[in-house]
Image 1 (cartoon, helix red, strand yellow):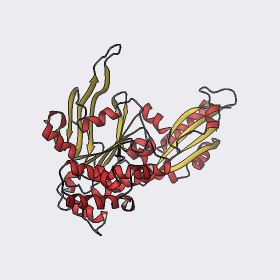
Image 2 (image 1 turned 180 degrees about the vertical axis):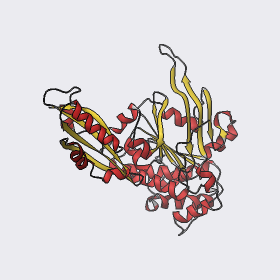
Image 3 (image 1 turned 135 degrees about the vertical axis):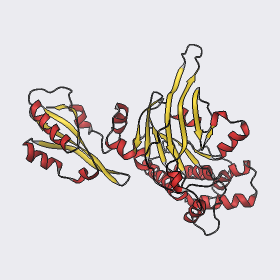
Image 4 (image 1 turned 60 degrees about the vertical axis):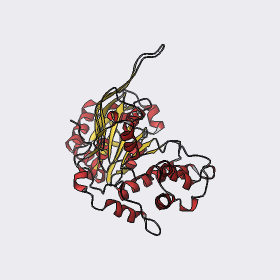
Length: 394
């Protein structure tokens, strides 16, 4: 039985493939209202749009190479109406997982169920129907250089046999939604990387999908453009009620846009949960390693170079104290010093926000022996704070 990533994902309107996107002066918000009309939002809040049920994927041995187990017994459910992130290192199995959703790969065992249908069990006609209900955003845009922005967005509709009037009725508001109304007649060579990706997103929305797949969509973009694309994905999710499943190796992407996250390592899901819970209290070493790349959690280079695994005469223990929720704004260190007499020196720190809730960490050094360190750790634990010993400095 699959476990949905969150007990109660946010209730959002769910898109309908039969609804049309308004034209003319009607805004994207009006489009969202039309799409949402009459939908059972409460039911959608507890339903999975994608379910992986004991899914494994093996690639057979080749000449001089052994069999590759890309995915191993994956059980995962993606809540309908959510933005769900799958994060992992290169080679962890992310791309294979997402290719199973749209039927580009078939599982060696288990089932991948999309909107109630077992993808691998479908014939070609039914599989095409499922694929039309799934939009795909690619890392390298995959735009046709000989077609304008408008024509690239229109391409899926042309392939589906839509007439010119229907195409115009859908493409024009989509270009407005992604902020490219004034670039409709521009060719890809005349667009920036961020603008190309916006065209790609509009194209993915052209068939009015129920699910949007994002395959490392921001990996080729600079940080500022990445933030704008993530804001657009969040807007689409919020206004159109569209479920988004994204894969990435960047924890910053997950932190910025995802409601829920699953961490994949060596073909297995090693941790999952709401984004806030997982980032504020990671349990698996892979999750902690990926979190180390966040600016609020990264260790300054000068300090990392001085760290030693074992204490020495006169050294100070270096701790990372993680704060979440209300504790992020409390005078914890002041209280620690008053209650225990422990001398604490702040070395680095930051407070961030995840889903509107404060989260951050402080890197501190504590002078004293093992008993002093234990006293400090016990005090912090008693107040619900995590204190990880990173090492020791002279």
